[in-house]
Amino acid sequence: IVIGSLLDRPESSAARLPNLLPPAPTTTRAAAATTPATPAAPPATSGSPLGNAGFEAGVSGWRPLGAAGLERVGDAREGAWAAVLTRGSARVPGLAFADILRVRTHHVYRGTVWVRASQPGTTVQVNLFEALGGKRFAVDTVGAVVGGQWQRLEVEHEGHRVGASLAVEILAPDLSGGSRLTVDDLAIKARSGTSITGQ
Image (cartoon, rainbow, N blue to C red; front, side, top):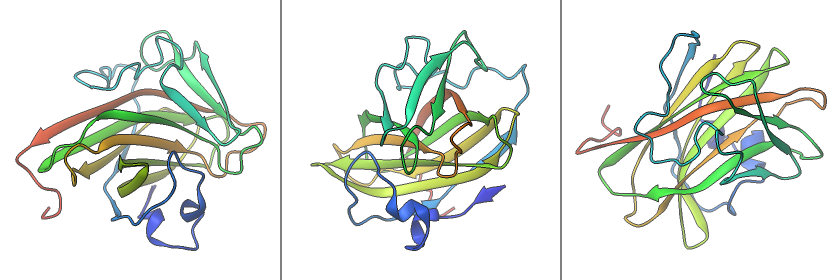
């Protein structure tokens, strides 16, 4: 189930999230797909500029949002390791990776990530956005309701400002106290000379 532009609606939980950077005026659009996972699928991290996308080197580079819990576990979709997010005392639990790469205009960045939840009906939101001078803008978001099977989420973002940093957040707003969200194989890929605004 794809959830539309969660950041478009001020009354949504996404408008109040404790994100990686303070909120700033944004242009927001949703671009997404969810697909059931198959164990034989190839790794999603091939060609990604994101270091430690599969948590094989621990959780280095990743930051829990709020007071969420974040740890590495040996329950991966690919490789030996994945990350598990727990609610902790966070109002909106999540994890984030900042400064993935420097944005170039007329480049489209596609982010994919695999997630599964211990509790069926868990909402997951992925934000792909630019940050510059301590401000965030141009946020693209996708959401889905996930359960116990690995599920792939995908979001696309078109570069707006040269030199801005591309960052990603993975949020689970309704993750219950005893539940876990497992995350693996985040990939960021780019293609040039194209635009998603006209698609």
